[in-house]
Image (cartoon, rainbow, N blue to C red; front, side, top):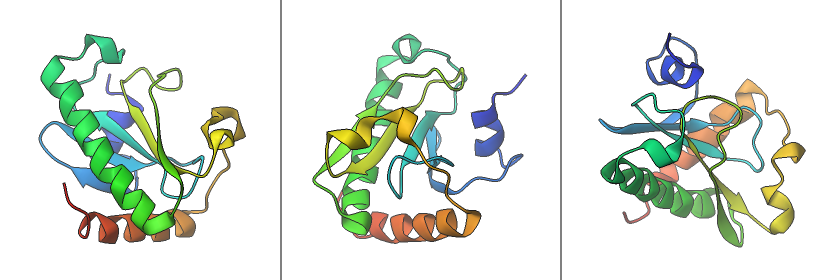
Length: 134
């Protein structure tokens, strides 16, 4: 059975997809740490990131870096946060978000964004992706 993330990638469940290629997709988290918080998810349904092949892990981190630069452009921040923990959904994924300080890394402090807010965040992130270097 397909995971929640595969259903989002395949368009079966709505999501604010901001990146899509043959290896992975990235979409906004419904309960972001900060505006523009995205998940980079491989198309392969692998539960634990350490079980992904090296090329896929490298590609996920490359996409995460591109998103991070775009997040700083679109939303500001001091750093780009990166978290890999995988407890919510049994499908490897990388959290990427603009961070202003250590408090932004607390996954328990997430807050829900409205569909309109997420759509605006996705639009700003897509625009910034077009402006930042890979």
